[in-house]
Amino acid sequence: MPKGEKGILGYRKTPGKEILFSFVPRKGNECASDEEDSDYEPSDEERDEQSVIKSKSASKLITSKFKGDSKQGIKRTRKSKQKEKIMKRRRNMVSDLSPPASSSKGFQPAAENGHQFWGQLLPIEILVRVFEVVVQEKGAVPFLCRVSRVCHLWREAASKPSLWQRIDLSFGWVKSIAHTLNILLENRLSRLKVLNLSMSAKLTDKEIKLIVEKCQLLESINLTGCIKLTPASFKLLSTKCQHLKAVNLSKLTSSILTPVLLKYMVETFNSRLEEFIITTSQLRGFQSVLKSLMTCCKNLRLLDLSNCKFSSDFLMIPIEEFQDGCPNLEILRLTGSKVRANQVSKRVKEESLGFPKLKEVSVAVNITTTLSISLGITDEFLLRLLKTSSKLKHLDLRGCTHITADVLQVDSVNVG
Image (tube, rainbow, N blue to C red; front, side, top):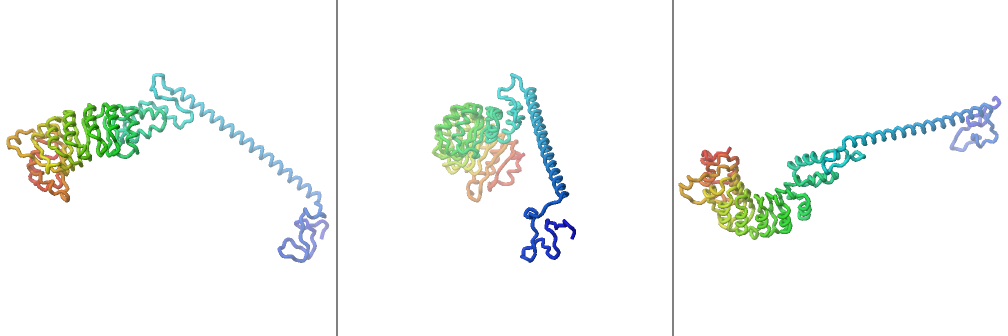
């Protein structure tokens, strides 16, 4: 074997005893590493090769590190320049588009952070107009309550009293109606016209008094199911609210809806009463209340007495007198209530002018539960009621077993 010839691990080759690696002890010499071999000395050529390799690797490491640092620095400078340009553009836009001194009071300059930029540049008059469109379709609550939390400009726009003219708190949008109503009355409802407090079982006379004081323009109120109110609240509404012309007193107890209270309200409202709704209630002595309606309320447009139980077996309706006293009636709903017409002479029937503006009549009954209710709804009743009602669009006769097909062919009973 030539001089200086060694194995791959630096161990001098010996014929017949070559062992590179083994997990099992065998006879022979194991290959020693270069570090543990004290007899091994690398040649001059090997030393030169190792030094060249080390120098090249060191130079590559230094150059790569320098290039990485330079690239990061260039990226940082580019980002900082871009940010400065963007901020400069925003400042220039704010200075160019800022409103004059005569602009709206609630206008504020745009924020530099950008996420509320367009909303703060929008004039408050335009924003209020947009809110009006939504309020007409969806209602003021809860829409205005939600947009008030967007920013200061939207809060100012949503607090305009012109947006709070129709409020409906009957859907359960708020947990405490009394508390919310007090807040709204103090800050928002100075121009309120329509208020729905249906099924507000915890509403008291205190809130009604506050409504009377704050809402001088109130035209319509719905107090369905407000069982904690006393007659004093209803008297206060009819006396102090000079623009009130529509009331809903449904689902109230007979202890509240006494004949004395109802007559007082009708006579106090007088000719300004246009809508009078009492449904699903027990009414005592309502015959006298109906007479007051026919005498005082010549502008009455809607009368709804659906599903009411009267102290007498039937509510007697003097049709011709009713037509003379309330000639502007457009909607009459007597669904599920026991009514019948009074007896009059043929001359009185002929001289009556009827209801020329009547558009809707409902006298439907549920024959499965109250068969006797339909006994008063006959052909004669319908003919007398619908005399000269050429504008009639809706006629509900479900369950009226005493109505014949012949009466529907009469010219006076013409459903458009």
